[in-house]
Amino acid sequence: MKHVGPTTTSVEVSPPTILTVQELSEHLRVHPATIYRLLRAKQIPGFRVGGDWRFDMDMIDRWRSEGEQTAVTARYHKRLS
Image (cartoon, rainbow, N blue to C red):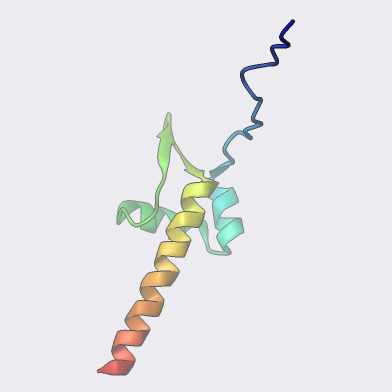
């Protein structure tokens, strides 16, 4: 007799961390007005829920990493000039 085990494995996926403007401003240590300014300039990833803005923490982390990489590259090129 052949034993047949489970064919699928369970992978635990945590739900995304979603922040409000206030929570994000505290996390980034900036004034909430700075978050709204970045939103108006389309420089920060966010989405609306009704009339309120929300932010996915994973997307914010990627946005910060990309910004840091851009700043490092700019400093490097400025030093070469």
